[in-house]
Amino acid sequence: MIKPYTAVGLIPTVRGIRKRKDIKINLDHLSHLVKAASWLSSLDLPVRLIASSPRRPPADARVSRSCRGPRLTAAR
Image 1 (cartoon, rainbow, N blue to C red):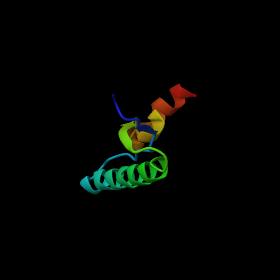
Image 2 (image 1 turned 135 degrees about the horizontal axis):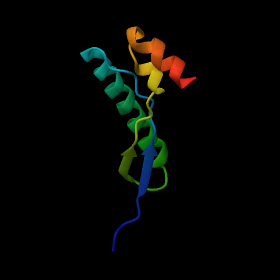
Image 3 (image 1 turned 135 degrees about the vertical axis):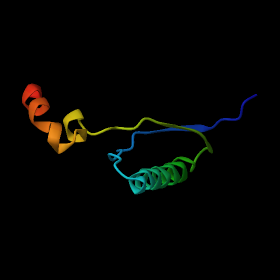
């Protein structure tokens, strides 16, 4: 028989990546979320499954400033 456990779902906000340090910022943020969620959720049963789905900023927020004009106008 499988022992009962808790599954946790995370939807972290992911920042745009332009430099390598931005990747580290996203990974640090995700590690803090996992640590907090597993600690809070394991009060009754141990956490054995963590699922993550990144929430990205809107499409026109990720476009560089040089390309923003036509896309932003088209989106409106």
